[in-house]
Length: 263
Image (cartoon, rainbow, N blue to C red; front, top):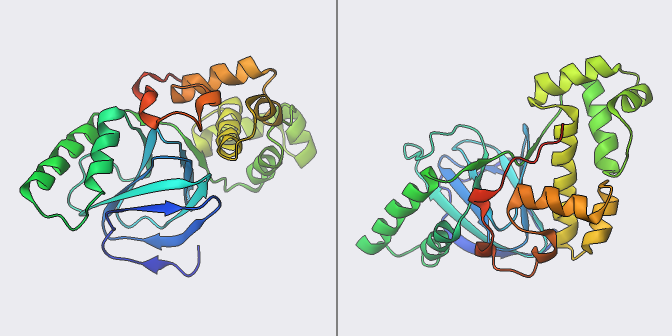
């Protein structure tokens, strides 16, 4: 990332972002919690892209160069924490589940950033407790470095519905299936089917944010049927894709969502 902006203090505030709007690469000396009460938020670093609908927040550690991208209209809420205040003990970006209580705490804390009252300090203490209790979610797409992996990932991202197996993709890019399988595990810590599910969910969230019908999303992202897509999506996010743009984010049960990896 070039032309990196350095803002020492991570802001605490609420702000809207229009669909497609970006916040260019920047870094803070503070940690930051980034939450979108509506739409879908993507945070990108050199290491990959983390993505979150309204039932998730993204933890960005101090010093991390990152950029934001809005899919659909975002009600963005930002909370900065000093570098020495790390309630999660995390040194890499992480997606966190946001239940109804944590959501209301985030909304309340970002409502009046200039408020220095004891009540607001107590609000932050409860918010930090809730962060510690929030389940971490594997919602990210790592950036490949090996050229063979780059070629395969580029094909899948260009057409999430591409049904080709890893062997067929390897044949198209001049790499062996076993080599690619090892690369997926070594660089990403996941299998090719697991990574492809991540990629398809990312594209599905982007399409849903643009009000694309569920059946069309399922087809364009490579699921065999709308019901198969709904099942995977519900297990990943705790709500059905048909309600993505119609429900308050707190209606979902992010803590109850289960693993969505495909074997």
